[in-house]
Length: 262
Ligand code: MF3
Ligand code: CO
Ligand code: CO
Image (cartoon, rainbow, N blue to C red; front, side):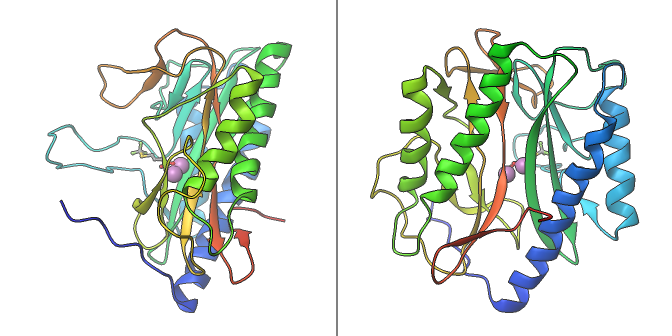
């Protein structure tokens, strides 16, 4: 198969992606006050969906990969909500309620005027153990280490190298099968961003590229398992996993984080 082409975004596209990304970040700001023991992941999903629609957007996830060549149905919900040992793509469910001590990632991807913004955060629910809090801190920091490695003229592999060399010596493992990705004009575009990589490998980073950095970091081993619903990804050993994600624009001099409200 031909290597997919990396889309360099023009100024009009960048403006559109910036607006969509900001709305995605606003959605994560908005949902924070609802995160408490007892609320169901489906209720959280509905609140995010209503917020996006109120702001003229829709979720890129609803029906994503429907009618695909693997024959599985499209993604059924607005957000992905992944608790504790769920690594990513947890499906919101009315029977799944947040519990004191959980860590929970909410991942939102907005489509506004045809442009995509993709971001996630891991939230703490009530009293969280020191071990899980540390995992969440390390994961957020790992994402920023990756982002800080972005510079025009550098390589995509520099990002994964920065993440891996930060998280692994601290005793954590980095998930391998799920990657960051180009985004903005489509949901998932080239280049794919491995969160473990060697410096100087992969495509050259250029101004006008837009991609996500979204490491999933585990307390135990890196291995994953896909549940029978064909979406939910868990750690094989049942130990907790955390994730943070930003959509980044490469500029002439460095980068800009687009999925922020600051
Ligand atoms: N937002 C996820 C990502 O960061 C993708 C979710 S796809 C879905 O790439 F279909 F599961 F929603
Ligand atoms: Co993403
Ligand atoms: Co995402």
